[in-house]
Length: 442
Figure 1 (cartoon, helix red, strand yellow):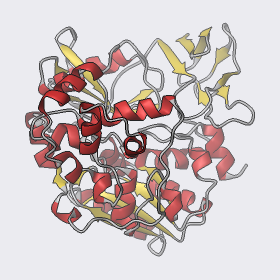
Figure 2: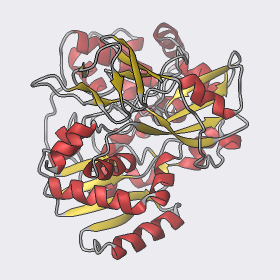
Figure 3: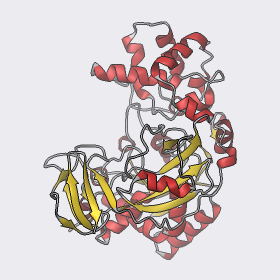
Figure 4: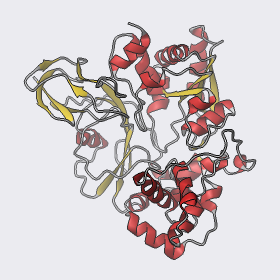
């Protein structure tokens, strides 16, 4: 079996973000393959620790992925503040005799350095076109955990475990490895908190992660971190604003200063994303369909809403409102050109991570979250069939079946984009639905 089939059978997806199936991404031909080790979301620690703990495996998986897509060069992007990890990676690249192919590129400590399009620009100087993806400029991007999973797939190991940082206003900040399908509450309690009635949980990073409406779910392959904060924290209150509330506040207060646009990472790459115009269209009910289309260029990084706006308004929500409205009408933005250049002011408007963390009210929580043995032995796990881009996995087991950890329990539907799923513990299948497969430990 070739590596691409091994990756497909292992159920590897992007280990964060949307969860795009990796085997589909690696069918492209690219000039560069890029490893996203930026981990620019505040408080999250997974990628930096994995690169320190498993440098050889990550380098080998990354190199193998690069060969699959025919890349001439494999570049690892990591923030220059991680000096010890950078030196370790360089040392191991030489020891593995990959120095002519794999290189390490130091990134500035800015947000959002981990945005795919920002990463492509920082590592190659190329700008991904509006509404485009990295392959359009000859690049394929994977992250550190995905590269580790590619190596494991080459050794016959499917994705059954997930690395997660638990951080925030908590006694114990940790990064742990847990079986996919572990109850989220079990992971949250590793924080040292038992009663969550006064707390809210952000699924992912503080900038892009949503506040979880229900913390009674189960870990998926996409989970990267849980940030636990008091319900009255600024960030929780900000993220809990409804669309109707945002529209009222925006209309009452926006003075069109355009700071949201001037600090927008996509605008600074030369794109036509201009949040202040979306605020204008929303606030004055301007019936300008063409003008509304630029909302589709928003990557939802939240820079405009959580950092740039001096009045604390909701420009990202304005973008989101029009994105959803246009999607309902199946209307799409069409770029007028294919080549873009970053704006000359970009170097002057990059936002340092420490400044962002202070603005978010997270400075006192920006502390290490060391990799720790979780000690979790979940008795019941639920493996979601929908935890990736594409069609849900098709169950291939029935209730009552005995399964072993690592066994495939859901496959990709014929002719569809998707990802396989596997049992993360050995036990008995207790329930099979369209949404999940439940397994109880024997």
